Length: 178
Ligand code: 5GP
Ligand code: MG
Image 1 (cartoon, rainbow, N blue to C red):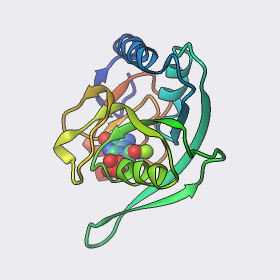
Image 2: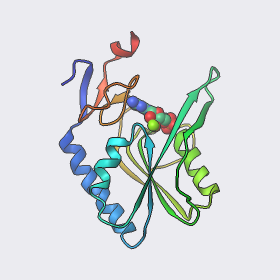
Image 3: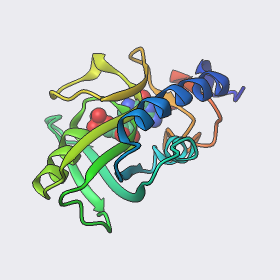
Image 4: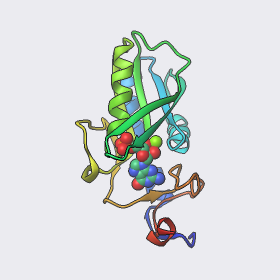
């Protein structure tokens, strides 16, 4: 285990098993459709690619990059850094996200896609941290409901580090207190 990690919360094996279940649920729902899978960069990259290999039906893939800012008055603001290439009008869209925290990022994205005429928008998130929620949004497909800790690995970063850990772990507080 990496020295900066307090504890492994979800091992590679646990993640693999949960992804099998999520993929089965998505396949059950979408196997007769042709959804657009939208991965939210950069954190959802590994989750998305591991899920895509399990989704055995016709689908398209696109990427979006957003950043959420916490201003001095802590009103979270979401900014679109890289837009989709696809036209989502009339499409069934599945958003793949690493974690739902305050919920601001997903609330913004779901609204954006609906405003552009998406037929349906579903949220598939590896992790959900409900203790931190500030806006009204729920994941439709959620891997794990997590405790209120700062998590890294399996795509999730701190200062763009630790994304390559094959598990989700709790980052030692000493690392971000530095
Ligand atoms: P939101 O607060 O808008 O729901 O989440 C915004 C983003 O914050 C997430 O997509 C994720 O990139 C990041 N985030 C939230 N909680 C954590 C966490 O525990 N660890 C890491 N590495 N990123 C997080
Ligand atoms: Mg993110």
